[in-house]
Amino acid sequence: MIQSNPTVEYVATRFRTELSELYPYREIEQMLTMAFEEVMNLSKIDVLTVADAQVGEPQIAKFEGILKGLKRQEPIQYLIGHAVFYDLSLKLNSAVLIPRPETEELVHWILKDDLPHMPRIIDLGTGSGCIALALKDHLPHAQVFGVDNSFDALNVANGNAAANDLQVEFFHFDMLEQESLGFMDFDVMVSNPPYVTPSEKAQMDDNVLNYEPHHALFVPEEDPLIFYRRIVDLADGHLNKGGRIYFEINRAYGKDIAQLLRDRNYAAVEIKTDLNGNERMIRASKV
Image (cartoon, rainbow, N blue to C red; front, side, top):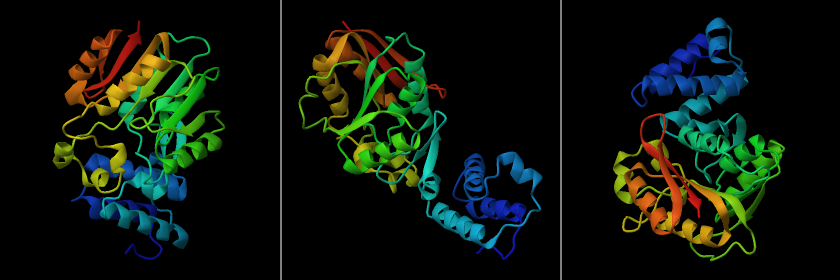
């Protein structure tokens, strides 16, 4: 329990002490910053400059709830109910994956590309809507769509669109079961699909494995490219000539996905590494 009438410094010290055996130091500091921003609207610098300020009882209760959740290794983004992605504040719950910095890099790659003035864009497997909403935020003239096979995820995405006043059309679509998107056509098709194989579970952190939705993470061991292949099938019928596919990828399968695209007569296939040097993105153009 956090003591009665603690100071900001005491709360910070308590977090660091109780989490020290569960998380790396840098991760603890990131979570601590997020907790103080959520509970007291204090920045990282504020926490240092008002270290002697007292924390009120309602705030103590919130800190205790966050600390207990973190000790269960529950992701802090679920505990505080939101995350920042490409300068957008997005509400989150356990129906959707927590957006990663690598996905921000994918969005940045798309935004710096030479796209049509009013591109039609679809995000396949949109989850929280993070990719679709970030693209719409920076490409206001674009028509942006997002699809997912989870109605719970679509509720989150629609809520994020409303909260950020962004006009993105989200609708239900199951990539593995439905064969067509009707008469829709696009200049950009983007996806961060499930791509983790069951054998990789041993390398995953408990806060991901125990709390984030498995249907958005895992693919069959015997068919790790199942979603990429299906999206290329969809692109054959819905991506305009000269249009581009962008994928976030499992670093273990970059060359396989690139070959899949080349075999299907896509050109200018490029694998891009993330800031950590891992092959994490791929782009191709429809001939």
